[in-house]
Length: 416
Image 1 (cartoon, helix red, strand yellow):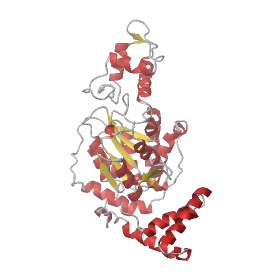
Image 2: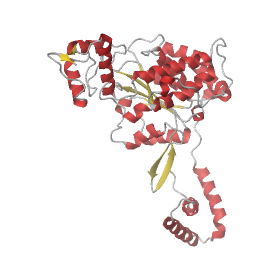
Image 3: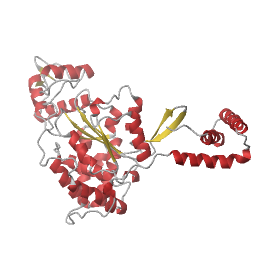
Image 4: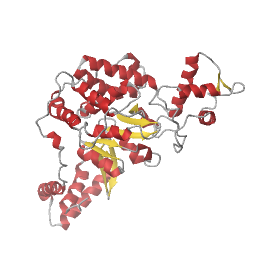
């Protein structure tokens, strides 16, 4: 940060003096500093307008140059297939590059990418999380696909707190954060703050820069790739989980290899969104939500309201797809604590087999067979083990420690 000029220093003191919210003692102190500055520089209060004008000129001279625009933002937009909607075309390309565990996840990924171009129209901008039980499932590739589709992308696997604030505040970037399992959420409150406060319009966070406290805007879209979000103990804090839509990726070969720098199909869709779709789209900030969503955690409704708004603006068919996806995610429990997810899966195993007692061996086998495979590629509670099927001993260790009255031994080798 450049050193303040005398005029800029005076302008900051003056701002405290005239601000209606300044406490009387602070105002008196600011007035004393202001008069001392004027005397020291041979000025009077009559010179204040000129001093403030000079401060504004100094601010402009020190402002960083605007970031170079994405070269794709310069028209004309490339033609896209007129026989499909924009969202259809995005989804078709995503299905070539990525492998998710459920069709609803392609819908969410598509809508989230489009929503980054119009997110400021809505009250919330949900976080998108790409996760898997282990590495090699395409999470980083998912962020690279988003990098070619979203508005003002900023992709990195080594964000610092300062760079996150700068990207959000100055450039309103779409933040694409890789290696999220390496982020230190436990001890870095500032890191949690930008991930959480940037979820809602008006989100800000104040940081001290030198002797000044600066308020940063944090309302920006954010996607994060992380291993082990859904397996105990989980990599994301619960508040961030509730603000996120969590897509589970599969370890299967995609239909098409992603080659950095050779994505004309994605670039054409990006140009269409920037130059044609976003400037002309008509959005409803409060679309009708399905009853299942209204009965769920309120954060789930907030997460899906902008996506459903984007879908409705495309076609009735996409509106129906978005609502079906919203209901699926509301009922999946993915936004919950990982141990709660485990307990939910255990209850599902009991319900499927219509029993009130089950052997531990049979329960573990039922968890292995669940559709998304998170218990058949378990990496241990510290996520430091080779992927393996959840063992009976691990199940015993996880659940009673957190919920001792929920899973108990009901006879030799049985759980009830």
